[in-house]
Image 1: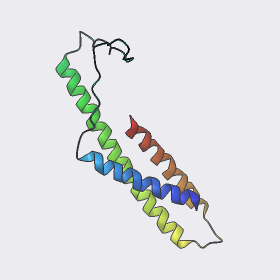
Image 2 (image 1 turned 120 degrees about the vertical axis):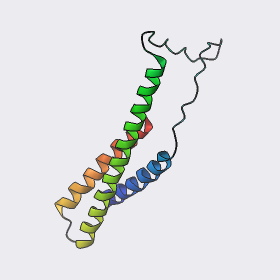
Image 3 (image 1 turned 90 degrees about the vertical axis):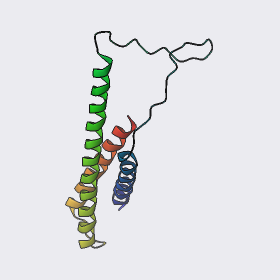
Image 4 (image 1 turned 180 degrees about the vertical axis):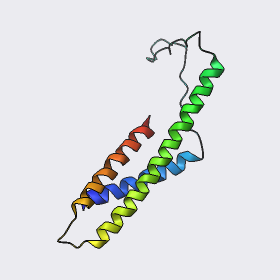
Length: 121
């Protein structure tokens, strides 16, 4: 039952985070390219001079769109799995827990962890 609760909480968190990301952009903090004494930090490496800045921007946008599509697809799959798991658990009683239910909960947990890691960066 603990795994079921963790899986459901994970699904809710992932769906909530996905809904928050779908309408906007993730804004990265700006890095200061100037080294200042005592400030720590580092100077970002110079971009590849052979790479067109417009092309690099387009590639980054394409990666961002692809990443968002995968997150949406995975959260949809998480919702479907969680719904199916809920239906299977409703069919069991306190003395009987199906192996399929445990396997599905493990699958949900792994997928939720994967989505969470991809959301982090």
